[in-house]
Structures are given as structure tokens and as C-alpha cells.
Length: 329
Ligand SMILES: NC(=O)c1ccc[n+]([C@@H]2O[C@H](COP(=O)([O-])OP(=O)(O)OC[C@H]3O[C@@H](n4cnc5c(N)ncnc54)[C@H](OP(=O)(O)O)[C@@H]3O)[C@@H](O)[C@H]2O)c1
Image (cartoon, rainbow, N blue to C red):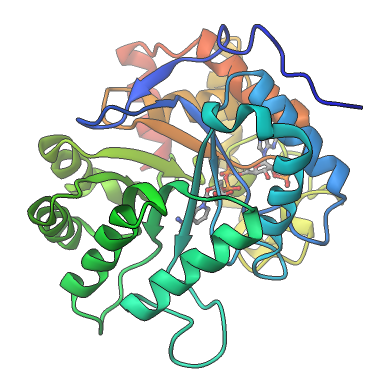
């Protein structure tokens, strides 16, 4: 059936300015790291994208290596874009990245100009796009001069292949340097994409302040710690879950009894607040004004509904925050 987007799609979402830029991002963005590769039924990926857009999630986050196999998430997304979303292209912010291993040899990894520019060309072909809205350097490269990597980001903007650029996984000090270089080049850094959740709080050690001072937005990836900060694992490991999928990023060994005990206590607070733990975990990342958007993953459309439902209850009392803090230490 031809997709017709929900006409009320902008009513359920909040849009937040990304740093000191002209671009607003939805408070919730959808990542295509899992559930968009060739191992996933295309129809499920399609339903996830339709539901997200119908609820006002206008920002979709990809990378060259998402799959498996690497590249297949961009290809499958390209197909769904062609079939469903072309009339809505200008309502979407589409991101891609390069920085992790993508092809054999010395030019398919890390942060050289050679790798970044050819990788973005490949990503555009796979997705059938003329440009991406945001292009990121995916992780710092300890060997390539930072100036070369930032100059490559500046180049793709000047070539019209990306509208904005960002960095991901950069520690605070290096991020500050990268942002300064981009400013000098005349292509401001739009956004930083770090991992941030109740279980992973390194960004609180200075990065978020630096980004705010420098007018750069932030988008927190894996805000549910891959599903650990939900009710998914409270009664064991469901067969259709990420932890059961053989993922090297989330497995049974990580779901220790100590961690599950914390999850249970957090879940009790969420229940008292009248929301699901997944919703409280997202609201917690968005508390204050330092994070522009939370970047979730989803395997089911109901998980997208849950995420958007969070927006109705984002306020925390000081007592609740203190109680959560005591559980997390
Ligand atoms: N820049 C980087 O280096 C980097 C690294 C990692 C990720 N990312 C980006 O961040 C995005 C999100 O990462 P993520 O998938 O790890 O995020 P996440 O939101 O922490 O985890 C998503 C997973 O949590 C589970 N889940 C979600 N909602 C739920 C709910 N309401 N109830 C129960 N379980 C729920 C689902 O797992 P099940 O599959 O078990 O249902 C879902 O796939 C990625 O797609 C990617 O775009 C970026």
C-alpha cells in the first residue's frame, strides 16, 4: 500500500534547537544500527520507519557500516526511502558516518581524507541521495592529524554532499579542538554523538559543558543501554531480544545480578511515576538542557510508541533524582 504519512505527525513531538544552529531536531531520533540489515525482514524495517515518522521522528541516524553486512542498512533504507518517503525528503534529517572498518586495505577505516570522502560517496549511492543532512566522523583516529579529518568534513559540506557535520565518540578535550578547527574552517560543528545513559555517564565529566559553551548540540546514543534500561530482561532473556541475538554489544554476561537489581529498583521508581522504565530512562537523559535528542533503537513499533509516550512525563522531582542517583552509584 502506498504510504501516506499521518497528518498529525507534528503534534506528538517536541523539536529542540541543535546548539547554536538553525536546525531543530526531534527530542527523539531513530537509529538504524540494528534491525535494518539484510537479516531483518524489510517489512519490519519499513513499519519502524513509518511509525517513527508518523509520530514526528524526523531524524534518522545511519552509518556506512550498519547492517549486517556493512552497508546493508543504508541500502535497505534507500529502498524504503524510494518507495515510501521521497515526497517527504525535505521533512527528514538523514545522518551518516564514517570512521569504523568499512572495506579492506588502508583506505577503508579511521579518519583520512581519502576514507571519509570516498565513504560518503558510497553512502550516498547506497541510499540514493544527493546529500545527507549530517555527516559524522564516527570515532577519533589516533594517527591521522585532526586537521586533515576536520578539513575532509569541511570539504563535503562545500561539495554539497552534506549540509552539516558532526563528530562522534570524541573525548572532551579532543572534541574541543575539533570544534575549534571546524569553526576556523568556516564549517561549524553541528553536533556531537556520544554514548549516554543512566549506566554510561562519561559525558558528565566535562564534555556536555564544553558542547554547551561552544554552541554545539548533542545526541545521546544507546540511551537505553541497548535495552538494559527497560523491562525487557526483568524475567530472563527473551528469545527475540538483542541479548539473545549473539550480539557482541549486549550479551547475557553483561546482565549481571547486580545490574538487574539496579534495573528492578529503577523500574519501581518508574512505576511510581506512572511510566515504563524505558520512558523514565529517556526522560532522565533529556533532563536539564544539555542533550538535544535521545537516539533510540527499536525492534518493534510498540517501542517507538513507548519512547514518544515519554514526552508526556519528563519532569523529575529533586527527591526522585536523588533516589535514582543513589541506585546508580
Ligand atoms: N556513534 C556511535 O558510535 C553509535 C554506537 C551505537 C549506536 N549508535 C546509534 O544509536 C542508535 C541507538 O542505539 P541502541 O539501539 O543501542 O539504543 P537503545 O535505545 O539503548 O537500545 C535499543 C534497544 O532497546 C530495546 N528497547 C527499546 N525500546 C524498548 C521498550 N520500550 N521496551 C523494551 N525494550 C526496548 C530494543 O531491543 P530489542 O532488540 O531487544 O527489542 C531496542 O533495539 C543506533 O541505532 C545508532 O544509530 C551510535
